[in-house]
Image (cartoon, rainbow, N blue to C red; front, side, top):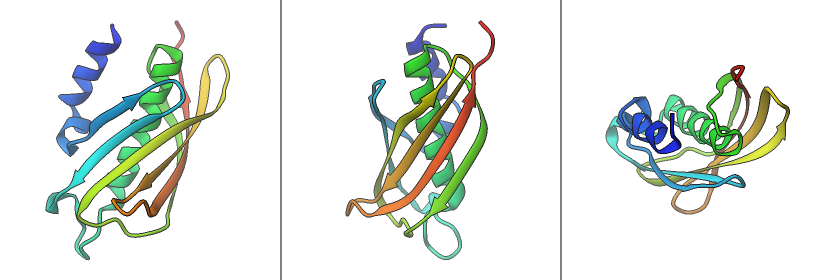
Length: 130
């Protein structure tokens, strides 16, 4: 499957339902933007942690695909929430940390429209046998 086909499928899946927009997909960094709406908020009026976790997981998974040329699956995701994200645009960035033939570890962060660091994550991805 071609990379463009994969990205089209992503837009038609869970990622697309959240409203993610891919601003940059390169081997050094993936950037995803999300315009926060009321449907992304939890009962106390801040962005739901599941939305933030999903954004970082998606950014890191996309980075794995950009580097390895094939998609992997998340085997570990660790998230630290640092600052509440609210209505407005947020940006997610993913960067490579370590890779082997069958695994890759990445880090991600989300920043709000004031460039405040909202959360960070690390993720490990396993690639299927070729």
